[in-house]
Length: 497
Image 1: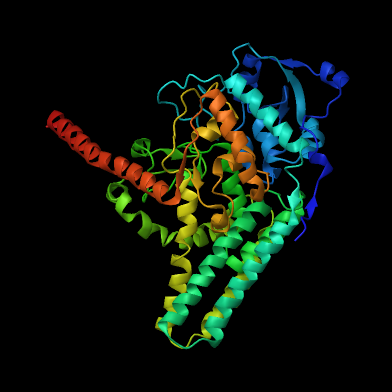
Image 2: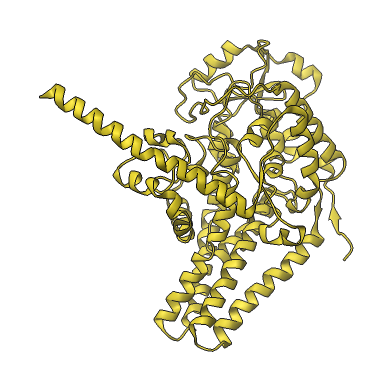
């Protein structure tokens, strides 16, 4: 099939805030101390392309949710903004929020608020060995690579790839329907139908992921509505919830207090820092390390696959919680209708299964077999670093490489991972069509090699082993924690008595 590629002209060159030099010169200057004081006074100030942008009037309107903006307050978010948004957003939308020219203090920092207690964004988790990396050089070369990819048309969407994927979706859907409607009434039939349904949901998740990143048309409203029609109607999950969650994850990947993708208490703790009952800025509550959490975490390496079999049920709960209770749900009515359509057609399909035990078998198989998607997602981050060696200076590129892992697989098996096994590349270039990530990997490896950054990749099997071992390492520390707590309680009791 000939390649049908649509190139968006807006991506033909690197994105910069389109502000005339005359207007830039007429903007007042803002020093580091002035920036910090204005943030203390309640302003949401973010540095983009050397300009200080005041986003108080924009934060509640941000399509990716307010936290994706709030986590960038007091920081240079140039790379985060340009990687996550189409060029026209940076060039045409951001200028309206510019209020000052930023005057750097020569420290080459990218964050100026790590010592401040912000109510909406916790300071980045710090720790580990010094990285001894030249963050300025890494940032420069990353931006050059980003510009190169734009100039060479990598961000253009090749619709022929989706034509092939569409055939796969239809095949899986038809297979599931045929088995349920026309297959012999046996456990094997409905177990097979459940597996086809699970595989359909897994594959559709990759497509919905692309739409959430505006990779298909580059137009946010069109991609998001199409994503709702796909994920909400066919999968029963809220794309709006996913977009809010996922954008936050990209901005603060693997940060203990801020990234919802690693906040799974009481079932999982990917760092002993979770033993401290940390406050989640995403969920707005303390992640208690209570008796239940101690039990589950102490067994997390053994329960990992079992818990993943029930993960999709948790996503249903999170989706409905978002749709019914979230202050930020721009397509609430449409999504509720679409998820209602899912419940209607799925229930109607299940009604064709003759007995309740077989119905339960089909529903459980479809949802439990979806565990493969959750394993694929968690594999890229669970065992990776959660602490920055230098939160004030670590640039966007270095942070994404540090917190993410690639999965190695044969090219013929790319479809199974959806092309998103190239997670490092995806985190560096979130809007790059996933079918092209494989072509970018050698360039990213070269960038890492030149700057001494560890590029971590494993086969799917080895990645599972690596993740389970890490979860086991954290689990083994629970016993030590419990002993320490008992000694503390005994000491307190002796003093009181």
